[in-house]
Length: 503
Image (tube, rainbow, N blue to C red; front, side):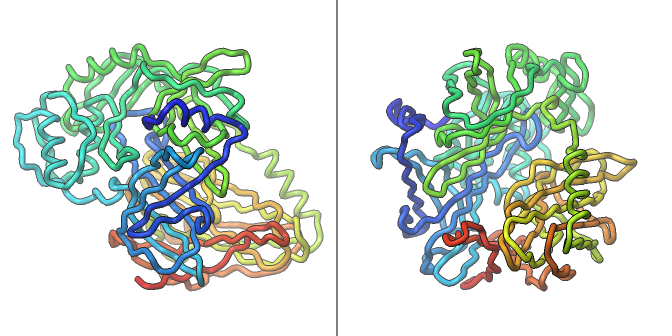
């Protein structure tokens, strides 16, 4: 949790608050007169609760722009409720810029994003994780906010990335590695102190899984052997790969988990910028009961006001009921309507999914009237059953209804998305997929995309509009995103094609 004053917390939780934002980027400071909006994704558990993660945080913002920024420029955003005390959101670096006229969309990541370089150790076994962490920080220019204990290490792995090594060190310290709001490396651990109380008045909507989550069993693959500590079924088991672990350390960690309990939750709320992924807080229920929550991810959105969506992910907290009934009803209604569109496509070439995100479907169509809706369905398979960690985005927005099904050596991924209240005229709906855990490939012909729309006419852009792929600051390849402007006349968001300039 970010260290702010009690006055700041009180102002943040006030329902009548006023919010200000500033972004110090490169040599320029953007205030609300130039800032259009931002999205900040602070994540520590991409799936359910675990240890040893090294997630990169993403910050994107749109501004009135005059070519002030270059790739790799440092970006520091802040939030205030009185114009005096400013809460930092992190330290990021410009990865991509997409410019249209006097406006730009800037996409940034924190330092973790660039630590995929191979770790060349300057320490040798036997050693300890404290010495390894100090070695990494010294040789890769990382400032560490705190150290770790001298847990003994019998072997120093080779051929690993710096990012992987940080994950191993964090795991053996019973935590997760992330860069904090000041840009310093921190090991986030479970804590029983400084619990924040989240009142219902600050929550617009929430769902909570009714059963407490607890960890009773560790299964650790070291590459040489499998270490186990404790016992229990899948729902209370953590499985991970970590070559640094010993049997003794695993048994010590399972005793730490014996006192930890929390609930799964999905909370739409006021943005409280001092809350971070990895924090453990309490949600105050309607009956005044305190429910412990482990923040897996928190998404902040600013457009003059600050909102957030908070996730506490557990193995038991899943959407186990696919929305088949709603989907079937919607499709039947579309089929019965006049002038409906049905567009289909599949991939003619292999698609490599990376952390940057790859655009895998793009539909362009025209609607005759406003207020209509379109249903997008995607099905595809990837190699490596059970290992997929992917995120799906429609027009740059994260899609939560993603379903996985394992069949043999394949992982079948399916999701649908409902685009509602479409404006009259030309519309674009595009889908991007981002890999969270390594690169994965969708083989040629194994992706099927479908869009159905009530009322309209159009065609499928089979070549994804022939958009040219571009490299970001770290040498990876990514498709352009779509930039949005608000149309004050009809209050719809219109998709505009963006080109990158000045690179």
